Length: 458
Image (cartoon, rainbow, N blue to C red; front, side, top):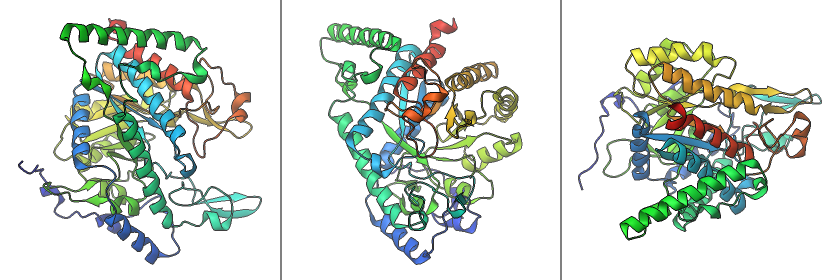
């Protein structure tokens, strides 16, 4: 087999550690730099969590989505916790993403790329480096990869050993997901195995059950015509993603695989740059421009058209389909004003990107009793507006990015399950941002499916 070659002329001045020459936002202040360097070297010797072959498969599928031939479904926890690295929690996340993808495939009549915000989403950016409670000021909690949630001096000191714990939990998670998929958990012959749990009495269960029956009937019909079992539908591709925030961790798993001409981040298939770390002269852009993974950038707030085009130039200089995804996150009240000028600029410049809507982050609010939450109707509104704006702008929505869980939490308000502001305290479990619960996520997928249905558009 011939080696796979990519054009790396623009990377002659790049190395996995060249980001150190740039200002690095949102990085922990470790008290012992020698310990950080030791951990980074250890990460560099440990086996990779994913392979370059899997990464190239995802890149090819994202290129299809750029052309409107596939659709990206990306979802999972706002921030994973080490405590949730257990079989039931992981299986529940996989199950809801499979159920959501089933709805999108059925209605949209196109293949869905399934990407989980898991196996590495252990760090979060914060608006302040410190947190103060009752007159005591300590470092802010930045995720289990960095420090601990408990508000004590010992727990809040950034500890580089936690980078190794994050690697280990990520490996356990992704290997369990692979085992589930290879063992038939995603077999479309039996989607009824993805039971609905607490949502079974909801009106959504009726629509979902009807959809499952329709898919089962179609599969059996095709197998009768073919005279054989459709074996390829007993498993699905499933990829991982996380925000590439803590650069010591990302550098530690950056490799130059044999028979490749580029560098890959082998800690995840699909890393992304957050809205707070996308500075053109910053360390994150410097690191990301050199890896050959498909990458994404969160786009929101007051970003200018010139800045967005410059990001496209730096991160995708060859203008290749499948390389760059722009995850836009403006909020239901601002998207109509802020998104169209950016879309128009990208279109006129001929930039090849995949547009993916994150309807969660721009719609975060805090209730009077101190709970961070999001309203179902605003999340849906931003999705609906994204579809319309992109269609009117001569493009298409290529994907969605949700913060969600497979559990029955009460963190977002609204939806058919009727979570009210007064209900938030019942099962508010997130460590950082509010997530759609199981029923809300499935309802959102069914509503999104109606937007994607060609018959609905006709």
